[in-house]
Length: 498
Image (tube, rainbow, N blue to C red):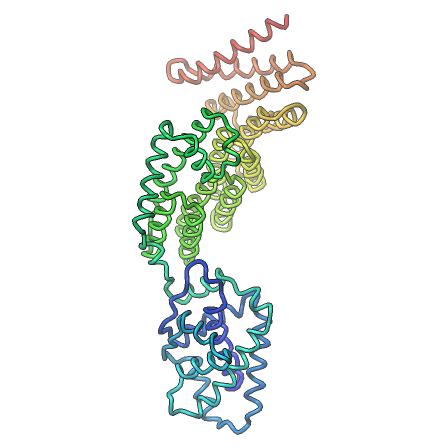
């Protein structure tokens, strides 16, 4: 590559990074760009160049090269020095967002920024370098600024990601440590209110409910509102414990975690989500299985926040992505993760309703697609039982034909699981699956669309009777008792039909 082309490309990358600092939205963490080596700032520019902004940067580089070609009198030795300076020099480029905003206030921003960059790189008396750098920088800056794609596609996330990859520090310490007295007072107040729901006024309870994403709390009876908030308070304290338990391998993660914990305590849940996302982005610098587990712990925490806000769909998206990330490295760990997430969504769905049970079913279906009945028989059967449980719970909460169809799917899942979970080879799992199957048949019998209630109850009774062959009343008293009670309940219903 010629020196001129090197100068055009590296100069464009430097300008793209500098412009990013002033053009990117001011909200969220900012880049601490003071005294950044030219090579580092240029590397960030190339990272930006490789994103959706490629076409803009390509055009800017061509414009810069055209400016160089208009000056055939530039000495080859000076061009070589300029290329080396842009590619390899470690001279600091002192550019903070405030400096760039000052340049933006001048009559000619392009020229002001170009002079600031050239002045940072070349000695004041080195007029030859200044004469080469100025037209290159001015052309690149003008092209980027005039291109709508550059403004549209240059996002805070893109700049932060580029900065992290090249070691720039994020100005998060202010957000992490600058806790005012009012914020501390708010934290204490929220904690006290959540710890004593019964003592709060109706207005306070409704305000708390809105912070948790509960819509129209004023329509809820007072007892129901209190009950929901008591459950939310438990979720809130569990979430705090989860954040406190995160294993930090990096000081930046520790800072982000502390900030997220403070934000959760103050019920600033949007801020907590963003801080956890920042921690995830930092953690993902290393793509080993161990790092994936650390990632998953952070993503699970963000999902807990989403559930705390009543956003089960967002929690499903996060958890599904966390499990999927393990698949290329260890598909069985991916399956086990989904099984755990399925259980968590089922539990949430049973407590709060909504789409969580449907999400659990979706995770179960992904697991079945990832496994083979022959080669992964034991885990495949466990996953069939898992999805059967989720389908059965959804079926119990759905009326008419929809509920009957879900229950029929649950029955089918349990029955195929029993092809592996046999009485001879896996007696306890066999009995538990049979008990689940019996409960599904019992619910089917009670569905208004059931064509033959007696037949369904008979099937349920046969399941409970068989399970009790395994449930030893001495060593498995709870299982024996529940199966026995279910069997007596079914027999009473059958007797009432006679």
